[in-house]
Image 1 (cartoon, rainbow, N blue to C red):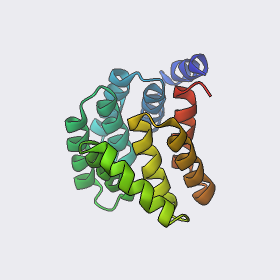
Image 2 (image 1 turned 90 degrees about the horizontal axis):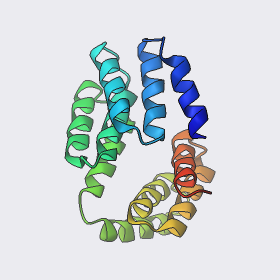
Image 3 (image 1 turned 180 degrees about the vertical axis):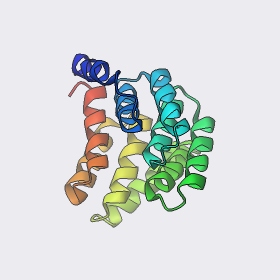
Image 4 (image 1 turned 45 degrees about the vertical axis):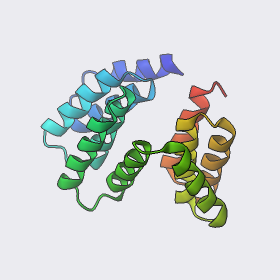
Length: 168
């Protein structure tokens, strides 16, 4: 899949619209090219693009390089620019959870997901935490459940990312 992603990135290089920058940056993030992604997200933001996903993607780039503090700071700045963006608020909470005690946070969120079995949000957060902890069985179960309940493309992206990173 990486060659196809690189081919798409190459095709979009001539388009410097904020949408093309966002799409290219997102593809760079998908193949763990975080520096290239952050450069493009910043370029889109500096062009005045108000898309909250640029902030979210930039934070993911920073987190991908191991800089969770800068990721949290970026999400906070994004929320100042987009105070009604549930996606930015959600991403900030996830980043803050990851900055704390992950095993304990996972236990409580997984318990909540099992208790509120129809809550796709709880399942997604459970899957993200399980993935961070290397719990592949719980990750797959949680992310699959989240997508099956909601059909939210963000949840499907998380599941697809898990499959790519685990060779499934």
